[in-house]
Amino acid sequence: MPAVSDSPDEFRLIADLFAPLSRGYPGALGLTDDAALMRPPPGMDMVLTVDAMVEGIHFLPDDPADLVARKLVRVNLSDLAAKGAVPVAVMLAAAFPHNVTGAWLRRFADGLRLDLEAFSIALIGGDTVSTPGPLTLSLTAFGQVAAGTALLRSGARAGDRIWVSGSLGDGAAGLRAAQGLLGDARPEHVGYLADRYRLPRPRTGLGPELVGHAHAAMDVSDGLVQDLGHLCRASAVGAEIRADGVPLSPAVAALVAADQSWLATVLTGGDDYELLFTAPPEETEALIQIAARTGVALTPIGSVVPGSGVTVLDADAVPMRLGPAGWRHFRQSPSGDAT
Ligand SMILES: [Mg+2]
Image (cartoon, rainbow, N blue to C red; front, side, top):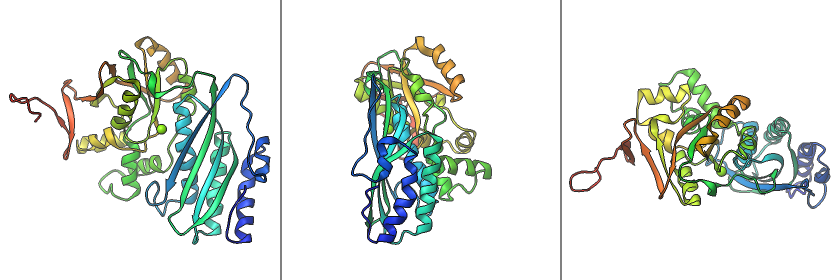
């Protein structure tokens, strides 16, 4: 890795730690050259994505270094999965504060190695620098998909069903669990949620299976309603979803049952890294089979409609709106004002 570091020792440590992570990928050139080489197989499109994480914003200062590394890999692989791509390689740019220790770096490299192996991908290059500011990490991920078949945000059509993988709300509830703010919840739920926040499960197996079935797809990283809004804008359509149809883990279901205001967190909280996609109704049977084959739950939560915007409906199909006190029923008063 062409590292820029303050001391020869640091340079050597980083080279020693990161060079093995190229895992024999030929174009990585052992992380000793100026750049890496990559030749996509014939008939494939390369899919590229980059995500940055800043200490104190995207992860907690006391989060274990190995989990920080693995989260960095996973949030990027989630974006590749959302395009239907199979991950191939990553490049890392890291700005380490002056006080970062060798032990921290070793643990960080350990976490990277674990997930590069788990997802069968290689570190093919990168750069490390020192910074007086917070620890800042940027990972670029490369994947591939059959040419012209990548799933885009812009393909949704009126009449499509809207689906999500897994369960929603775990990431946002997990942040609070990791911060020790879920004192009343059951200990096993707190543990599950904190783990979901620190270690997202990118749907790398599911994403490529959706190619040819889904019209549009993205991953849920900023919250269901916001992200579905992005997808609707890209596709020039609207969406109607049922709040009570959104799949919940037992841990989040327990939080909602105890306090309905958690529903707002489920609908708008971030960090879930599940896949959100639309597909025509005739694909439903194929999707049920994909769910069974991949072991990832798929849940229909609503429909794509003509128009624009995301409408959230309650169990009685009455529109709800997000106010300061969370999601509330939205009814027209006789004067026409929303109340
Ligand atoms: Mg994304």
